[in-house]
Image 1: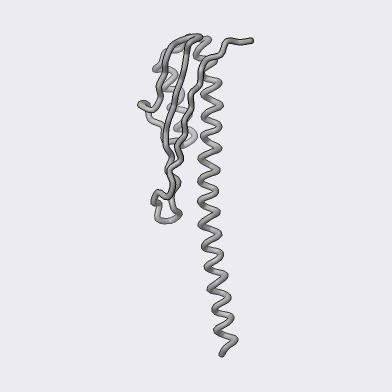
Image 2: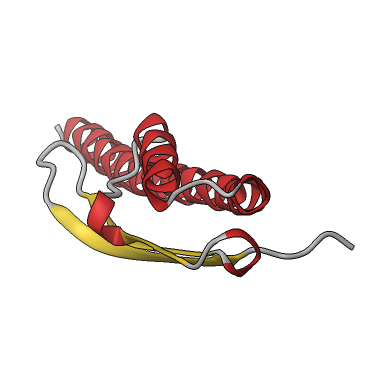
Length: 125
């Protein structure tokens, strides 16, 4: 009988470790995914500020393009979080937003990651 208890204890311990590892893997994956999408969004902002500055695009056009990219990347960016100042060579775009990192299965917020971008037009060298 003692061998049966030991075997059950080992199985339970293994199951517990698998659950803990899965939990941390999910959190890590979610965090890395969000950070990667934010980096891509930031790179797009740098591209867009140069393009919009050269072309003289309106603030509404810039905001619409950024909202479209955020939606494509599944980032929770809203129009009121995008600030467009200046135009052409004085163009400056600022975007600030928060992303919730949720607990697996129950989908409750565990951590809130804040992202801030401030990109200015730069004259070609």
